[in-house]
Image (cartoon, rainbow, N blue to C red):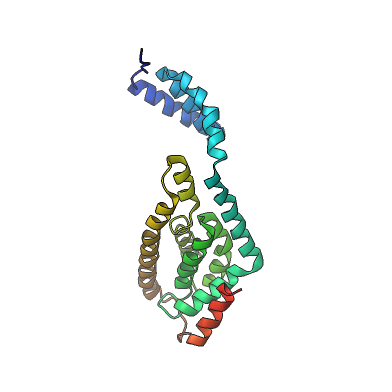
Length: 231
């Protein structure tokens, strides 16, 4: 005999959402609130015995070999911050695009693209390069609000350009090839960066944000490249 669950009714749906909102309003941790509402949802549908699978799925989800990439991404980002690699990446990006309209803002975007290929996290990008970028832009005449907005927006490229922590999580949960997810994220990430650079160029001309007077020489670019990636 096949087991049938109850049909989802509008009242049950409203009750679940109402409970979730109530738990969040009384400062219950988000994880606990979502967990409780999920349990009540299954019980309300008559699928309570499916909850027996929960411990197994939780254990399997946290012991997958693929998920080992996440702490190593975080470790790599912290090592780059403490080792001064982020400063060298920023200097290399400055020699490449510092002369384009928007100047140091364009450097922010390119540096975020480079750093995202190492950290895989928007938070790591904002925490690592964000402080350097924000101070540099404000020192060169950017409004603090524009500077902070640009840092936040460019950091979003981090989870898109591979390697990416969200891609690893999605691949481990859905059994989708992580390598294919990485390949699929590269072009959208580059297009995001190009779109931001075009938008910043328009904004910089309107607000007269400065840029470098001269292009960096090939020798300067090669030297900064070796400093960022050669050691």
